[in-house]
Length: 262
Length: 376
Ligand code: SF4
Ligand code: SF4
Ligand code: SF4
Ligand code: SF4
Image (cartoon, rainbow over all chains, first blue to last red; front, top):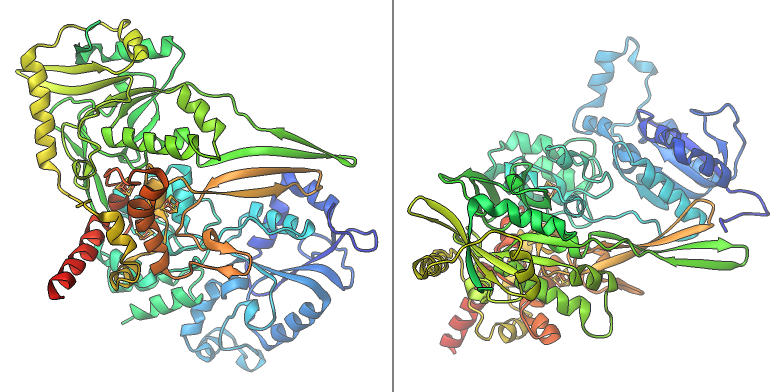
């Protein structure tokens, strides 16, 4: 039986920080499973989907987005207190997201250029993952996340079992699918060997190299892959950019992209 | 029936038709995604006519041949393993019914396969997996069922691929036994034909449905010469003398650190290896908690989860993971199954994204060891 507290369904809240909404919407996108999800949990707070906004505490908090302002910091601390388990979803919440590209720039200069009255803007100098501020029980990677993995994580929490979410390379998924390796057979640079599984090897299945949307895998040897990229004819700049995508600020990718910066 | 005969290339389709008439699903090499892969094919036309491949560490390219050969290429990206031992398999489903549990074994209807184009090294690999899955305490019934119904058309290698070393492993370039029929493709004085050898009664009964003629002594001699030439073309070698012991005695050799620096722990080598057999099981529940199923999924000793046990992980470093792979293949496998776990197909070399070459790694350990001995 799924976990029930005092005979009621677990209460779930979905929160958003700096992000594009894509990840939380994948919950709504899971049409076929949605009824079963709604049957198993009580969605108490999900502003993107419903006007119903029940106050905490919640059994599970699902958080999308990165922390970019002082206000965010306070808010995520409150959320942490009100949630039994905290699950972060997507590259923004788990690595700082594409907006973390600004971590390499001077944010004050951006603010000056973009806003008419910069003095009203209060922002942190970096975009950081939720885990940099509060304890996170489970990080679900991806840009965007895979909706089946999200349901699997909720499902596993409900039944108190380990989620079947893998931390090995994308290559293993590629081989399970019977794909021909695009790097070996076509000479296309591919981040698959250093990227975590989760998408089902979508890009290599369509003749593309992996873009690293799921962030670094469990034991990423990025310098060796970078050397291979350069043998395939990529410039230092290309290599730096390859690691500076949606998960640019994840430690292993950040280090590698910086190593190839001029 | 004559055990050796000659099949004109134009009549190869008859073999497909005969097999299909006997209820076989024919699987063979075909072009896909700029490579030659094994897939279900219906006819001889779907074979990679006139295509070959160029292989080196971390590199595979299709190339055009100057003739219309059907089997003028070498090891494919993946082996036949994926048919006999599928990457994902449902083991059972479970339903909760009130207070009782209802268990049903998943026995997918067995497919009767005919593999057309099994290379000698691959045939050896199938025999190795037979030992793994069909002997000892734990047997795999689904594997046995698929294997029992399998028809094997072996094809001898008339060219050696860039990463092959079957002659070192004594598995090729000619299949000696354990096939139903074997073919050697020949171009001679403008003629294009196969020399056919029959390896089983079943093979003989299929060949009765195919138009063949007698192979002359010279024609047979031609195939022998071609196979000898393949052997001499072999790009790679691996010295196997005393190898199991050499590796077992060098578990702390500094070279393991060296290869660890180059290895991505991506797992490609184990996935493409025709003998690697490791899997994991995963339990899945539905949201209601009323239904569950157990899946089996290929796993690799390069994943972190592989060596996770209660209390910790006994194989965290890349060094220990690479060492597990190489020593299992070439050393402890012999203790376990009485044969080497490597048949010399070269796949792990070609498909390693950074071209780590086990023959070179073995040589490095062996070389350093010999030098050390000399220095003593
Ligand atoms: S295509 Fe990319 S992800 Fe797939 S096996 Fe090759 S390197 Fe790995
Ligand atoms: S270890 Fe490598 S060369 Fe040997 S059988 Fe496996 S894939 Fe082929
Ligand atoms: S080398 Fe690794 S994956 Fe292959 S059979 Fe041995 S332990 Fe399993
Ligand atoms: S040896 Fe090559 S294929 Fe195997 S895990 Fe290491 S990098 Fe991947």
